[in-house]
Image (cartoon, rainbow, N blue to C red; front, top):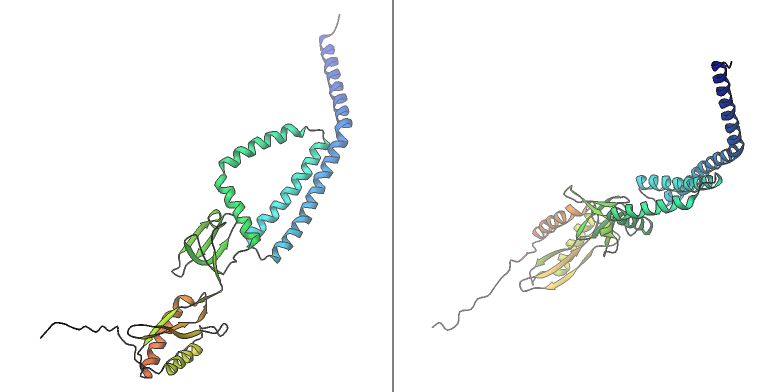
Length: 282
């Protein structure tokens, strides 16, 4: 008579032996491949770190924003690690064609859903590498103007003298006509003097007060000349160069200095005049 307990024990032992045999077969079959795949991923990690340092050194020379630099370095590392991951999957015998096809379909759908974001990203990369303007420069573009405060992958931030900030999507900048003032701006002023004024004395006074103004740059030299011969006055154009930071207050300071200097020198600034003649009266 068979012992049912002993029979069950024999079955369990046989099952364990089969599992052990299967595990050994799988280890012998896939063990070396898993080891090689692990080594490939480890190599990808170190290659990614090495390439990241190279990219960071290159971006430091380009004087890019810190946030953009870190993002680009991480992107380079991820791309390298992704390439080595593909090699590891190939070593394990994974069919990559269906995986790539699935990723392609998903990527196409994601691209359609994120058209605006991707266009900003592409325009941001174009701005970063072509460098039509830099942080600190004063620009006018897309109907806005201001000093460049931040250049990111998705938008550019301009600061205004009134302490406000303008955030412009990068896709609105790429392809637009850009006026880059750089780090300096030219103040455009005009002052009228009477026709009987000694113009040489008036021009000398303006030159002197511009030379004494710390906000006015010496190079390039200010442009002071007779601009127009108006109806009631001779208009003198005053166009000095100042830094972007000094621009908001420079015009007021120069106008005040011109008025005080002309008063001290007895130079009149005439009011507009009209001569009216009445005809046909006895």
